[in-house]
Each structure stands twice: as C-alpha cells, then as structure tokens.
Image (cartoon, rainbow, N blue to C red; front, side):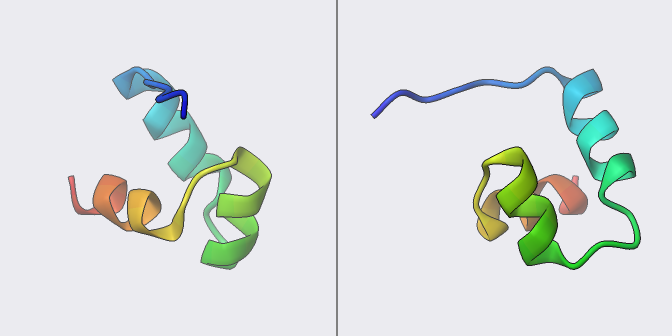
Length: 43
C-alpha cells in the first residue's frame, strides 16, 4: 500500500477547507481516514 505524505501547509489547507463539514465527509473528500483527521487536529 502506498503511503502518501502531505506537507504541513497541505494539512492546514485541508483542515481549514473542512471546517463546518462532518468529519466523515471531509475524510471521504480528501481520501484519508478519520484517525488521520483527528491526529492532524490534535497537532
């Protein structure tokens, strides 16, 4: 399985774009797991 890496700027851009959305919708749109989303938010 290919492991993708995103830069800090990309992570911030994704989190800001997903504000106001449900977590599941944001994850589906950006192709990541909910665990990854919560880990990013924690940082």
